[in-house]
Amino acid sequence: MAPDPPATLGDHVEAVRAGDRSALETLEAMLARIEAIDAGESGLNAYHEVFAEEARAEAARIDRVVAAGEDPGPLAGALIAIKDNIATTTGRTTCSSRILENWRSPFEATCVTRIREAGAIVIGKTNLDEFAMGSSGEHCAWGPVRNPHDRSRVPGGSSAGSAAAVAGGLCHAALGSDTGGSIRQPAAFCGCVGLKPSYGAVSRHGLVAFGSSLDQVGPLTRTVSDAASLFAAMAGSDRFDSTSADRDWSALRDEEIASPIEGLRVGVPESFLDARNAPEVNAAVRRAISLLEDQGAVTVPVELPLTDIGLSTYYVVAPAEASSNLARFDGIRYGRRAAPRPGESLEEIYARSRAEGFGSEVKRRILIGTYVLSAGYHDAYYRRALQARRLIAEEYGRAFERCDVLLGPTAPTPAFELGGKKDPLSMYLCDVYTVNAAIAGICGISIPAGSTADARPLPLAVQLQAPAFEEARLLRAASMLEAALGMAEVASSP
Ligand code: GLN
Image (cartoon, rainbow, N blue to C red; front, side):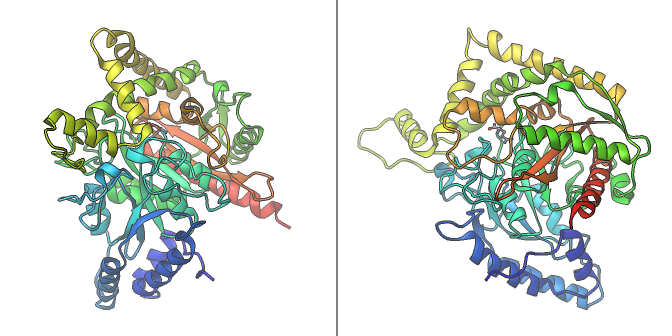
């Protein structure tokens, strides 16, 4: 029997800070739970590596700081899992790729340093779709991740292990990365909260680059308030990332995220409630609308007709950037080198190292990216995608003149069967509601919103979006909805 699931991050930190709970004892229980639930043939496979010894030393240190009456930090003793495309100096950083199988980073990502300085304990590294390319958690070099709600289903991707670890109670919270939905969509499939910060809100230093103009690190948590605390610890400018923004986040820290926004204007675009969505997904959105209206929010109709062109824009821009970013993994400067063959040229070593090291989805992205950037096709694809990107951002700008937040689905369906999507295009369609926020650089959050009527109920979710750097507004609106959904659940239980 596995030990009981952990408390929320907020409750745990409060107990540790008050000296009512030992960080070390909590860690031991968590390690036992990981052992029982994550390993083996039908285990979740959420973790690549667990840092038991390092975490024990750190937990013991936190307990000593508390005992000495000193401040152990705002995230004291929180056990945080880190997506394995974020650099840690403990263990390896593999991106779930054979090409980085044994790569150890010489430096630590800024987001990791910041949460550690706030008292958090890094418990391990989580599985992902290779180089964060995917929407199911199946494109992993060492086996797929399973959904804790139904192990025959996918957890979503690419932050698959992070979402499964949070939902399976194998950490207090996790860090993921989102380039086109990789935090929000797995959060939706696994029934946890996933925040994609505005582009530039969190430093990308130490996040292995996929699409540099889109990538953001963000939290996956059980509650909205936990997402706010982790985000607050990470956000802010960083001299190692020139695109990180120098914003004043103190409002977020001090602000009562739990206090409702009076007269919140919620925009619900018709294009979000597409008839091709699973009916229970649209029903969850409609229910969220009426619960927010009960809280005094007003729903305003807004138009986002370009929702549909987001996918084709994203699947040009992201692979273009990926093809350039992944050029460094050549088996010489970075990555596993193919075993040498007599008389082989440097060119041949590069080619063979890459052919052996990358999985098929990553190769597909590199080929698409190289094609859309090549002379002769650049104007037809890449330049047009950049034009579409501008239009999408402008369309959001107009929508946010009329509403404070947008509400819609996170994904068109709940979690699907492992192996259920065979062709790449049907996989890419999972991202239709998440890519646009990344394209426009705004913030978005997925929160749990009930479950399906299946024998093994699957989580349903809704997504809220707000303008760039309006995370405080986004989190407050999400918190209002979370409370309303919680109350509705209590009212409907026997
Ligand atoms: N699913 C999308 C893709 O495959 C998004 C990935 C991400 O956000 N990292 O590209």
